[in-house]
Length: 275
Image 1 (cartoon, rainbow, N blue to C red):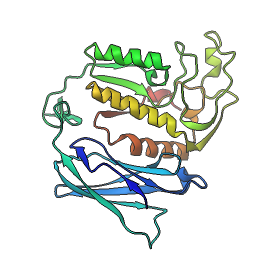
Image 2 (cartoon, one colour):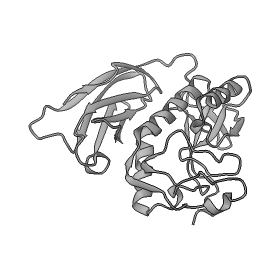
Image 3 (cartoon, rainbow, N blue to C red):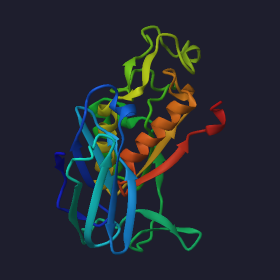
C-alpha cells in the first residue's frame, strides 16, 4: 500500500499519514481507516477519513518529544499485504508552539507547556465561507487586534446579514434556489427550503480542506479556532439530517480536525433551537 508522511514533526504538531485506496462505490461509507501511534509515554488509536480522489488520511498530534512508531489498518488492506507501518521523530516545539489550551487549576486556562492563556474571543460565523477578499480582511483584522480565539461554523449559515451562498458546501449535491431570497422573505427559507438535493453519505472534501487551511492560518497568528459543529440557522437542511447522517458527520469532522492543536469544539450554537 502506497503511503506518504513526514519523517519529523513538532511536538503538538500534526502528523498526517496519507495512503492510496479504492475510489469505487462510496468510500465515505464503504471503507474505513485508522492508525495507532505509540512512543514510550503515549499510545493512541485514531480514526482516519477519506479525502477524495482515492486518498485516505490519518492524523495524529504527538504529545512528547520522542521516536514514535505507527501502524495503519484499513478495510481495504488485504491479508497478504505488507504491514502498513512506519516511524517518525517528534522534535521540540518551535517558539510559538505552546501546545493545546487546557483547563488549569480548575478556574483558569493555560497552554500545554504551562504558559497562561487569557481568552479574548470573538465570533465570525462564516468568515471562512465568504469570498477570498473578505477572508483576507478578516485575518488582517485579527492579526492587528488582541483577539486570540474566534468561533466559526463548519456548515454555512442562513441569517439576515448574509443572504448569499457560501463558496463551498459540505456535501455533494445541489442547493435550493435563492434567486428570490431577500430580507423580507428570509424567514420563509428557514430550516430546509424546497429544492435542496444533497447526498448526506458523500462529503465534499474541498469544503473541509478549505476549513483546514483557515485553521492553519489562525494557528500561525496564535489564534484558537473554536469550531461550531452544528447550528439551527439553516436553509439547506443540514440542521435536519437523520441521526445516522449526524453521526457520520461528527465522525468525519473529528477525524479531520482533532489533530490541530488550536481547535476547540462548540457542539452546537443555540442548541435549544435545534429540534
